[in-house]
Image (tube, rainbow, N blue to C red; front, side, top):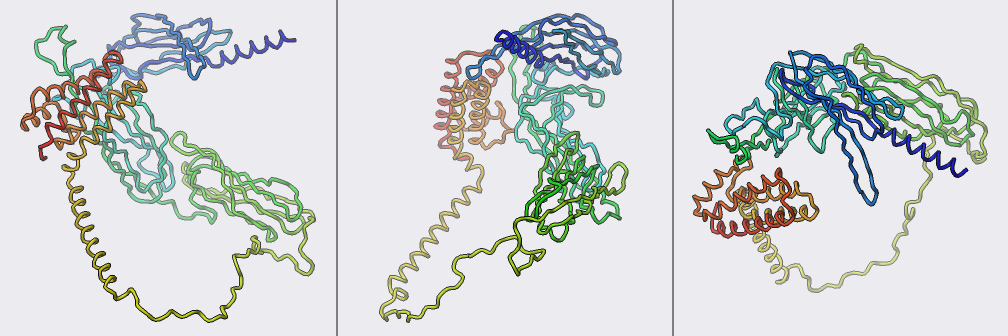
Length: 606
């Protein structure tokens, strides 16, 4: 018996491990003619694989399939997890422009066949884009970055809708250069719409897209589902983002080995997504009386929690509306109950979700009721009306009549006091004392004598209050003037802000979050010098900082050390790990550099 139990556990473990396996395909969806690219099939956590290759037409197979295996083991909170993946890689070359389909590939693992879906690849005549914006193949300089190299676009799937009709807005960043980060992001505001954010990635994912015959790396920054709440032309304001672009400084006539010694420069470029206008038409006339603004396509179901109940016992009526449209904004349907029923406020359960650019799911309204008399009752059908977008007409749906049998209950009204329909459902409450006694004794009179009002101390106190108010006004006015001077505020708070960022960088270093550590250290160095010199983030560059510090007679060696330290932080983010001692040395150098620069600029008035 024990062996049989162990055998069952082993079989269940094997089935669970097999169920967790997956077989995926990875390939760019847009390539250029004559471009070489990779087609990768990956089997994860599948044992004893038997790979069946796909049918490939329209592409020249240069190599493959080549097999590679990766085993990964992790320890998380004392638990060991292990995974194994096998990749089958093809090197293909695109041919003539057009759209080509690569058939499905399959893997047989433990008598179970896993298949990938066919993928379609578009071949265009444009030039190839880099594999990722973080790895730039072509040499880019600051001078040749144009609005065609990086731009922001807000797209909506509908330009003409009716009031309450859902639509989707997607904000995407397109680039052909090395975008290393983003700053000062201003997402769109949707005045006149009810909006819900449905996609907000923590980490940007790049994918190739065809834009006017050119290949771009595109990243979706945000996606929204919108419900217009007013009619007319509604304007969606522009969106903005400052892209941090890394460009390579090259020298003419350099050799192949000189590429290893090229320096990089960070350039900030502001890109703007133009404003859009959506035409929202009002719903047509002739709406039914039961229409409350529902737009889409819906179904209605009504049911009682019990078919029979005793008088004075509670039960619930459930009305469920399902479908797609503006279901999340539906109002509570009106239900006509018999007059002997005591009705309470409905409880709403929202099971809707945003899918495919609209809202779908169900919304349940629970009506708690208490029948106060016995007998057979019929609840009238629940009526619900909505506007059908596809047909362009109003539709009214109704539930069936609901029959309820109420038996005589144990709780009956008192003798001589018949139940009256519509009686208030709340019991009488005693709020404190209902009757307050009248004072019968004579109140004591105040003895005549000296009063504080009109005395010397009274006038001294009044003058003191006016004097303190005057002093407070002068002090607050000076503080207000000081705060209005943004340049002076930035100059005075530069050292404090830099110290806080250095403290954050030190914490990230201890937590071994090295990429965030270098980024925060770089922000501390750039932010300090920008605040001291009254520069915006877009105006910060090595040449500008060196010129401005030189004009203020700052020691040249200190300037070179400070700017060199900034470049060290930039290179360290992409260079191999230099070790813990080197990271701590760079941190100490940053603290010393900011301290020395603070002493050098202490007498400068911006």
